[in-house]
Amino acid sequence: MFDIILTIFLLLSPIIILPAIGDITALQFYQFGVIDSTNFNLQLQFFQLGVIVLFIISMFKKKARELEDKWLALFLFVSLVSVILHPKSVLVFGNIFLGFLLYKLTFEHARHIRLLLFAVVIVSIFNFIAQMSQLLGVRFIYQYAGLMKNPSHLGTYYALSIPIFYIFSPVLTIIPIVGLLLTKTWTAVFSVVFTIGYVFRKKIIDRLDIVLIMLLMSILAIFIILFYRPMLRDLYPRLLIWKETLKSLTFLGHGFGDFNMSKPGQFDKATNTYNVYLGLLYSLGIFSIPIFIWLHRILKIRNKLFPSILILVIIGSGQSIMDFPRLAGTAIVLFSLLKLKGGNV
Image (cartoon, rainbow, N blue to C red):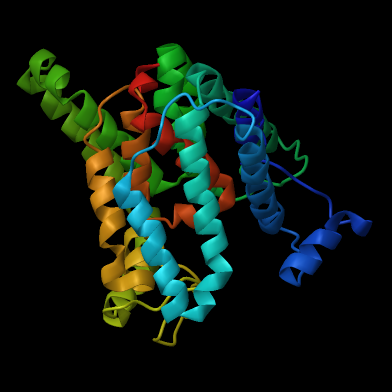
């Protein structure tokens, strides 16, 4: 039962959509004070209620294993300390706690890993079908970016799903690869290229002679020449935001909540750092150390899910992926599955 509900959670959390009509959005208004037409608040509510439902179900299920993760637990504790130091953090702490709870519940109760991963495959295929329809002029629900509306979110999801497709069938990876390239999400594209090179580095070196290596480098150079302008357009505002973030860092952090640039200008309305790691440093200061130690330790685990995790870690350097519930839920579950010894699938 737990695996079925978690599978449904993975299926719906990235793409759940609700029309803004009548009393359907009343809960959004009373919880957030606004009616959100982008479905962000709906996805956040679904994340929150989904984790609570999983917790209730877990109370009637025997644990398959016991979670022991002192660094992640310490991160949860210092996040609570941040609430005391920066009261505004109380608005976000609940989501951090639920994220930790989702990680814990998945580790302790998940048994059918292939079923959970298959949900990621299905979501990617649905997005691809919608994306192709949009390219052909048949636009239902959203005008672009499949069922996610945001190209960078869709690109991130395609990127993390490529290694999962490969687990089921290497041939099927063409679906998320083509979809990813069409989103033109360069951070996600780079993360996939780097991960492929890193994971298969020994095979590539052993099997390729110098001529083929030079050919691949030439193809990469041509790709950069053709697309360097849009890549720079994406990178430039991020560089400005990162610079301002570094200048604003404090020893105890600023607390969780919206990031606000101190420098007025074209990008002064940025509400996140476009970098998970800088965002943690900005929010927690020295208290962010436990999560970095946890990340370092978990990246030492090697199994078939490692490529997806590495892709997420790299994308996190250019996007604040954990700020978006449609991506955060899937990412948290994958991190938890990586930690499982059975993550070899």
